[in-house]
Image (cartoon, rainbow, N blue to C red; front, side):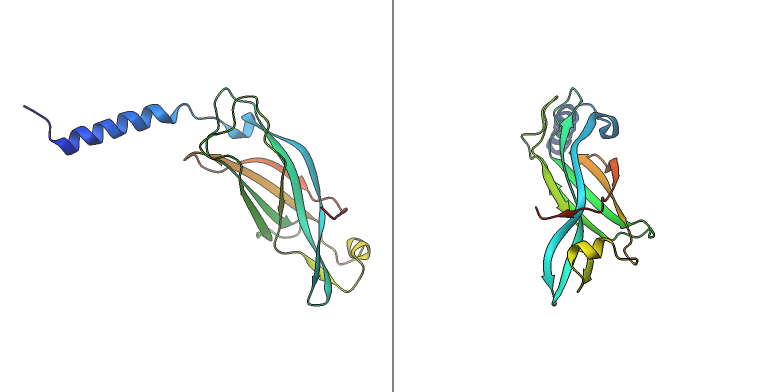
Length: 162
C-alpha cells in the first residue's frame, strides 16, 4: 500500500527541516560583544532645541562552533529610574550567509528615537540636575530561536557626534 502524497511530502519536509536546523547555540555564552562605546548622540536641532539620544556601538564575535544564520540584534534603551522602554534599535547582522565560527561582525551603532531636548548647550544638557542616566540591554537571536539578552551597559555621559 502506498502512502498518500501529502503524508509523504509532510514527512520529507519534517526530515529536511530537522536536519537543516542544526544544534541550538546559547547566545548568552557564545556571542561576545566587543569594542563597546556608549554615550549621548547629538541628534541635531528639533523644534529649535538641541536633542541628545542614547547610543551604543559594538561588534559581535561568534564563539560557538556553529554558523549563526540570520543573526539579529535589538537594543532596548531605558532610563535608570524607569522600567519601561524609552527607545530601541534593531539591526540584522547577517542573512543566510551567517556569521561563521570564530568570526567577528562589522561594528554596528544603534540609537534610541527618544532622548532629551533643551535650549541648553549639548554639554550643559549632560550636566543638568534633571538629567536621568540610561542603560542599554542588547538582545540577539538567530534563525527561529527566541531573543536572548547578551549584554547590558550603562550609557556614559559623553557627547558623541558619530
